[in-house]
Length: 412
Image (cartoon, rainbow, N blue to C red; front, top):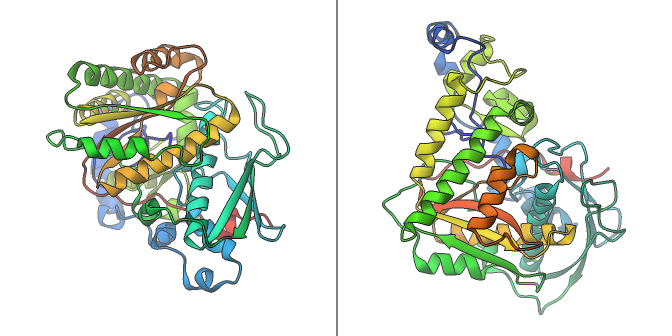
């Protein structure tokens, strides 16, 4: 969810695709790289996502579909939920019959860009919502209890469960029409069609998709092409927050740590931030792509990414945000449940969506963008929190993000 870093298609590089091409001399190294890639062969550096890394998006395989333990079928849909930096920090314990106990993998956190783990908790909410939809599809009632051993504190997570989900056959449960769009839901970081406004009925559908279970209410707001001044302010805040994350060494290096360059790395990890640009893959093979050092603010790698992101923002016909009156752990999880519903509703209308999470992150350097987006969205009252902020519009289709194997999520 958070990560804006990769697009495996040929679209302009954004946060996931941000690369540190240079150490000190951008032009000379770029020239050397261009010449040297001939010896590596760009044809061997395919921009395609490796098939086994995205096999989960084809739906449950025959073994899962025919398995008597329906929980595997449910989980095969839940793992397609959006997750910050695509870390996939979900752990499912199946030790209790007819129950799934959800834990967080504490080795898959974002201490620099998500120091309070708010976005990690939202990512567990997206998982729980898709799990609930899948259960309904199979005639099961999913009774979810959040934090059965107590909620985490406001600053840290621990080994206690995030939720237990008790599954009970119930012929009265209603299927959720948003389930049909799970396999088509992809975060899209490409440029959108600025000439095509988001229709009013689509905004209404996204707004009405939230809070089906009666949890603490989430307020959904949006700004479209008709809101010129507001649209410009959204772009300004997003641009500044992006610049900060690019130029704070510890935050960009956190993204580098989970950056997977080329098909072999993507296939080996099947998580994180994927980059398949043939030029970058070739440079990686030549040792010209250094992921151990952050670029300087005036390096070409930084300034070009800011320019590319400016163009991406300029192409955006609409912004959507989600605000809650509180920010406790249960509210964060439920906000994640609502977010994936909003994105599925957008998918149903053929719309693309990309989270703009940098300004919502609670580290010191983002204080001003954080304050600005809260003021712009009317969330600067006591206790209110902008849980999600995203760009929305029409765009060409993109490939899905990699997913680990189903067995990787199940506690042995």
